[in-house]
Image (cartoon, rainbow, N blue to C red; front, side, top):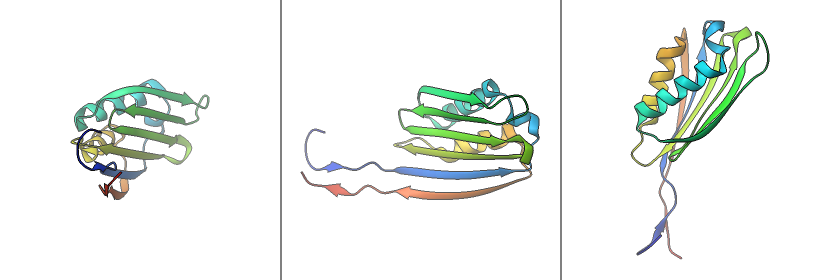
Length: 125
């Protein structure tokens, strides 16, 4: 960084557990990737890469979408109607918007959400 004191990253980290999701919404890695890319756009984030892995017929998907602002990841368990989502974004991106898009797509019966602020701490070199 140029000029003055450098700063550590600052952002918001959201963890969302989606319960009571229809199993069909949790099986298709391409559909899940599409939802996460839509979520990133809605949050004002910029995707730079991703990987989504299906575990076989009737089984879940694990995936991560890398962002300039950090990441969105998901792990699904269709047999339990459950998805665990992790959204961390720095800068002006709005991770709560990403969670809202994912919630609208998955249509869970309930959501449990946790958040952690990643604070900026001045660091003098």
